[in-house]
Length: 302
Image 1 (tube, one colour):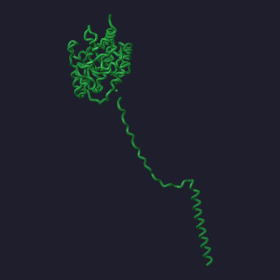
Image 2 (cartoon, rainbow, N blue to C red):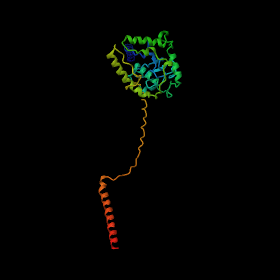
Image 3 (cartoon, rainbow, N blue to C red):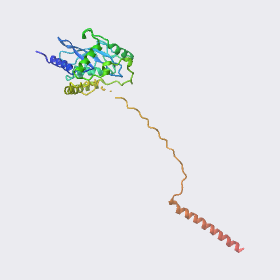
Image 4 (tube, rainbow, N blue to C red):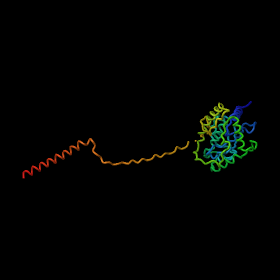
């Protein structure tokens, strides 16, 4: 009798084939072992140093999946993750406490694509190398060939053929996705602030659920564009793919300092001062008249 884990994996494989994403493809290495998968994943879009890169990796699922999380490792050099070593992410076996059975392989790959742009911060299996080296690896990754699967085809050939399948299913594939962006043609953009991978993880599941509902309603007209692991879960939600997606610092505005010029003016008598002025003038005139009369009187006496 088929176990619940087998039924779940068969369902996920069928869903990935019926509702494909142009950003990645994944499948069991053999029909006899549903717990060992390989994936081919397009790098995040520009200005990411992984833009234009196509990476190959392995997913190992435990017999109790989806109650326990899968583990991931990259087989293609990327400058972000060590080659052929299990990586520590909130969606991997290193953090069983954050895994949720509602997530799946599609959700995990969306998250993985988004996590590539996050800072390694000393995580297990993570690397911090120069951006130029990452761009070089991205260019070389397109020609990389897996010696276990894909029949000797390069990563680029695998993904290009898969995107033709996406078109046949009614999924829109943008032209720049087909051509790819090589590191030589990618201009370096402003550095991004490190993204909180745990926050992304907590948003992916809802993105996955929303995407699945939209795809089932709109197919074959169009594939719900996989969002970066940045939605809200149960989650991983951009992958910010979709995550994003990450917040840019608000521009600082400088308020011009206004200089207030104080002008000193000579106060002038107002209308209310006029009565007092008139009285003063009248007083002066009376005093002068009194003095004149007094002098005239004295001169007559002599």
